[in-house]
Image 1: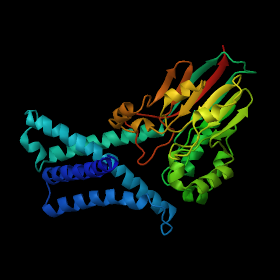
Image 2: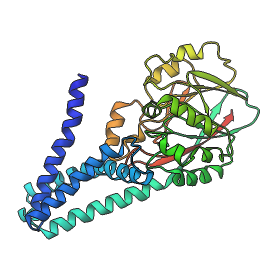
Image 3: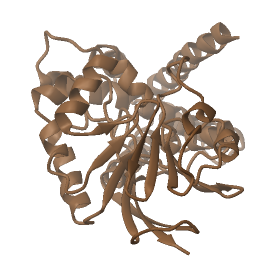
Image 4: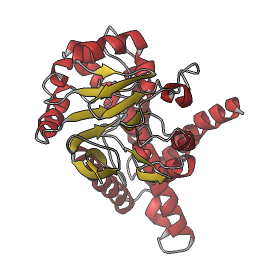
Length: 363
């Protein structure tokens, strides 16, 4: 079954390319060699994804970043070209578009180009707008004072979210003057090389609140020892299947489910002082029922990105009990963040980049 899923995953982009390239060949009103050049350029852009996602010691940081951006962006562009051409084909079949609209047509070419430019310029601008999401958490447990807790996930710092990007986020987050910052994994994208080369860990040390985090699956992609080294340099308190008592809070950071030997939540919560407000950091929002059974007060997760772009958001909503936003099971509250950063191309279409500003109050 797993092999079948992998075959489908590889086959769909191939079918998408064939369908898109055929339409591009048909619609462009230019000589055959120009059409061929356009298709080769499109194919080359997609191929750079496999080069750009590698941690290559032979390429400069800027070159690697460009390859990563172009390659991963091309995957999203392909998705939207396929959807657009399907829509145009349907309109043609029901005679709402003339047959010539998709055949050597400047009108058709400029229409497709215009729609794609509008969608992706919007998507990029929307990605860079970080949404401040307030969240009020109330508890019957005793707190010495109300707490302001910044929460986020999925920074994906690396070749595409560089130090200059992260510096802007830190400046924005410091304006909150939070008591504590919680990060639910995937701080690192795919490699620590660009982070160490640019000394991005120095930006974490500028944050004006202590940072507590758990691992995500991308820290495993980058290599656990290298990720641990970066966390140490950044001054992040990493919790890997362990608990931290912080004032009136007890924070448990779970190892990512990439590790099949991680401890169960029942093991991690055994012997915990239940008078403390009990927070779990778990990168991937699976098995929410087990968190409720463990009588956790609050769980922060990420990982889903809410699909990053529509209609992938619909798929995440079908896969996860909660793919995005606040959720509740019994007395346990959850928040699944769509992430402040992103994997791959910097586009948010139908989703958002966010950070959560939670206020924890005694009832």
